[in-house]
Length: 325
Image (cartoon, rainbow, N blue to C red; front, side, top):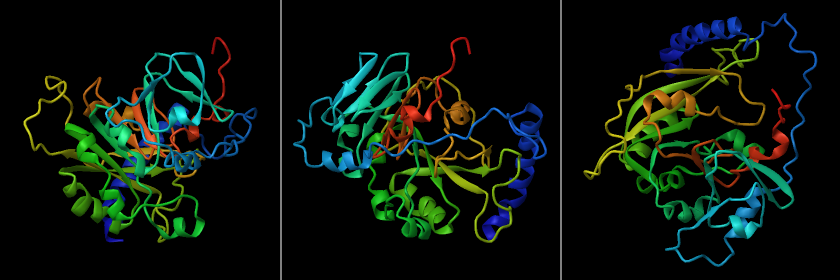
């Protein structure tokens, strides 16, 4: 409650300004206005291809030569890949077009200039062998909490397991690290006092994601004693141990402000966070290397890793635009 009291006015005032803009621009709709009558509720696809089970299978395959550059570059427009093609390899779509891959009979869309590694935390070596370091790393750890324990919806990691993620090996000099976090003070303290120091990362800002409805109301009452309508992001910079040259060092970026608000309607997909590329663009170098950890979808220009990294790239989550749209 002490933390909530400290940021309450900031959340309230900042959100109201953005919500007013959303109502004016038509992104949000007042409750009394009916939305497009023709819009149908989206039927979400069944989890037809259990990606996390594929990751389990991968552990039993013979490992490739660790010195190999373990990548698979997609050339064809519509590519069928076997499970073995994906295991222990970073898959790249280097083209400027979306590609379709078929995996176990299911179609997935790969955005332009995107790459991914489908694996769990025990098989991250191909990402380390990728010969890339990253200027931005976004991480959405599966935090342990009571509701996760009760639902068994997805597995969680202990603080010790999260600390073992090899951020120092993946981060370029001056890398910006962004970690999603719930409002539990235990998790916030852990990031600031243990996790970031263990990775030689200095906290530079704390941002807030405020969740609203289509009509511009908070998804939970702001002062609810149980669930709050906001989550946090902790931003930090990797501190230099060696005098490596900075990528695009001559490009100026804006200093990162503290307590920036992101206000959006949450996705209907459970725990699906908004993409941050657009929000971060003023504070990062252009043409950098960007990485998302524990991703469940892909983004153009980003590398993504996770044991369900293709989950929301399934073709059934997308609606084809009519020609001329």
